[in-house]
Length: 89
Image 1: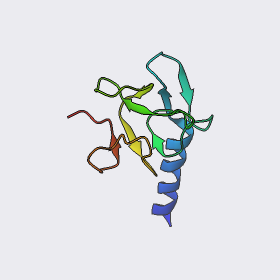
Image 2: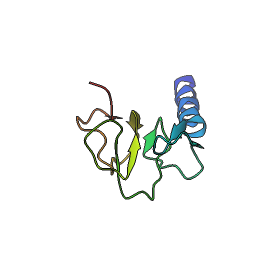
Image 3: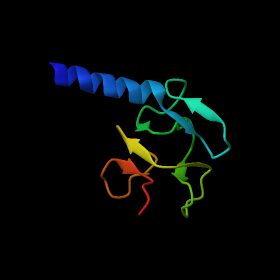
Image 4: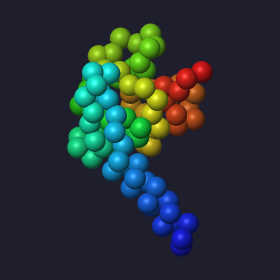
């Protein structure tokens, strides 16, 4: 039971306290305020037509740094399937 409670707390912190940047503009956005629930580590706009990894060869229109994929990776940021998107190699 304690282990489950610890996991719930960690997930709550991830969802409630993640600060990220949509497009590198320096405008922070807080998770829970319109962020895509499929990703943690940055606030991705769920209404964006596409995200690509910052510094990569993608054409956007939006970019992100490293994120953890929590659900459906509909932006295709996790190339190797390990639930870590836009990870440095």
